[in-house]
Image (cartoon, rainbow, N blue to C red; front, side, top):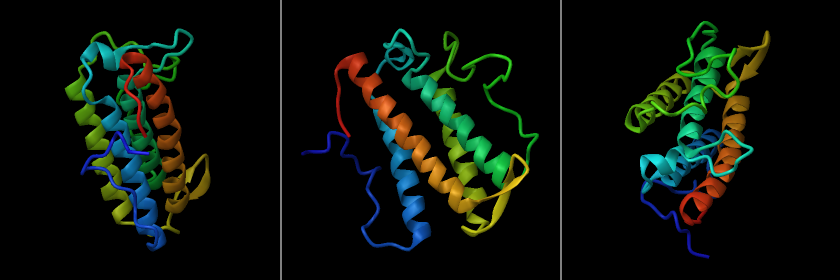
Length: 172
């Protein structure tokens, strides 16, 4: 099968790497996959919510993942629990996902890039066994990387479906 998202910005990690390089490689692969799923669409296409029972849109997923990056690497790993959210409001369900009426794609994509960069810098200063704090318990960078890969992989599955419903494009 040909990878419809073949792009020089995205490559699977090598089959044999040390653990950290493998984890970082897969996280970067999935980060890039999400961005590729959003490319080539209009603003309306990225904001579309083609599943009537869901708040998910491609634009909303990018905002959500920016919040996830911020949470795990700033609040948990660096133990900065007072780090403010960009869009998430605990009083409003799905507040990072909707509404998107006034959301600006370039601004929100730049925010996601900023959060990914901050996450890389935070992780660079820690070993895989170093811990932050989540819900009062130690949480290792290894666990955070594994969770982030899972989170992106799950949402990239959503992005696959959303993209197909928006404009018929399919791919890995």
